[in-house]
Length: 178
Image (cartoon, rainbow, N blue to C red):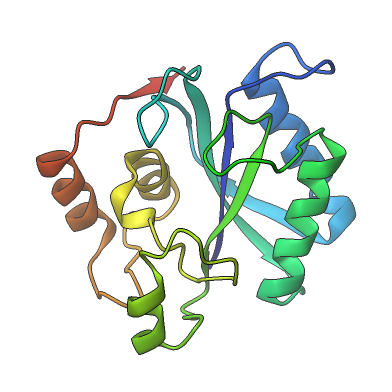
């Protein structure tokens, strides 16, 4: 299963809400060869790391594509640019953020290097599965919505175990949007 995370906490000039931005990103995917198979509920979350930014709207989508992981990332960055995202500062407020959370059971770089590189926030190479997914309720709960039996390909932990670990150690605010 290929999983893409979606997040927005700004609207730009074209949209009236972060949720509308996410809808536009989802609508743009088919033209890039990306087919959405399942979509989680939408969640509101406080920014991580904690800041005075507006809250995010987040979701997770299971997608199908013939693109390689690197080509998929390029396509997602193209969608972001088309919706007005400008990359300036890591973890800044943004109109759209599209991340590859998982690409089947692929691990990039290989497991030993993945473990070494996952905490290096200056890392610019593609890391799959997403290196901080196990620390983010705004990824884990939506992931549970679409695939409750998902297992992390490096740690072997299932999504329920990962959620419980974050809930026990982190102060993250997350609300389901109806």
